[in-house]
Structure formats: structure tokens, C-alpha cells
Length: 128
Ligand SMILES: [Zn+2]
Image 1 (tube, rainbow, N blue to C red):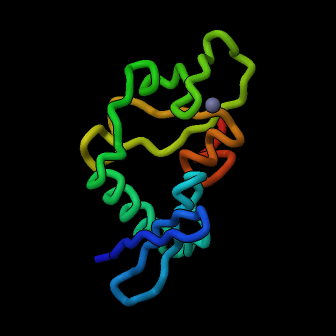
Image 2 (image 1 turned 90 degrees about the vertical axis):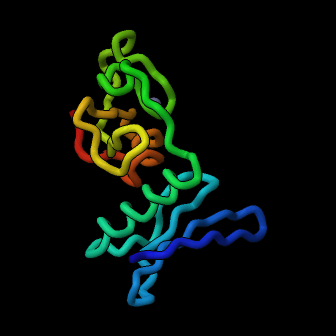
Image 3 (image 1 turned 180 degrees about the vertical axis):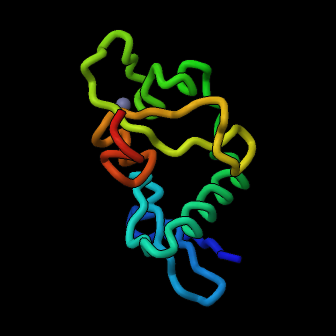
């Protein structure tokens, strides 16, 4: 079982994730939303813990049908139907109110800042 704890100082806000063996698995910069220092061999534990924390603290939200359909950027709301040439990437999707991957759709974000904020990588889980 992982534990999470918040740390803040000088305008920085971080959520640290620690494994049950006391190994630090990484942290999320809560100001930028970016994960950092994530142990790649334990990324699944890290992201599961972060998702659980987001869920427990009410940070998960209901996604719209357009977001779940990949028609708009889940981060900035850009409408890809208006701008079909815009590069986009798949980002992690959780079914609303659960920690399970959503079967109903695939969230998409613009390659770059939007994808990085949603998944930790500027290219998300892969380009579309
Ligand atoms: Zn975007």
C-alpha cells in the first residue's frame, strides 16, 4: 500500500508518493500538474496512488461526451473538428468516480503542454 503526503514551501506544492517499503516513487507538482522523479519500474504504483488521491480529494471530474469521444482537448478544450491539423495524443482515462480505465472513450490532449499536464509526457500515451 502506497502512502501520499503533501509538501509545500515557497509557493511550491507537491504530492509525494511513497511505497510500502518506504521508497519514494515520485511526486506531482500540484502547481503545474506535472509528475517528476517517477521511478519507471514502479510507475503503475505511482499513478494508481495519484489517481486514488485525486479521487479521494474530489479532483476527478465528470468528462463530457465530447471529451470521451476524443473530439476536444481534455485539458484546454480545443475543438479538433475546428482544427483538424492539430497534433493530439491519447492520455490516461479513468471512468468517472472510479480508478478503472474508462471503457466508454479515450481522452485526448494536444501534443505538448496539454498532454504533459494530463499524463506527464508531452506525447501522452502515443500520438493519434
Ligand atoms: Zn489542448
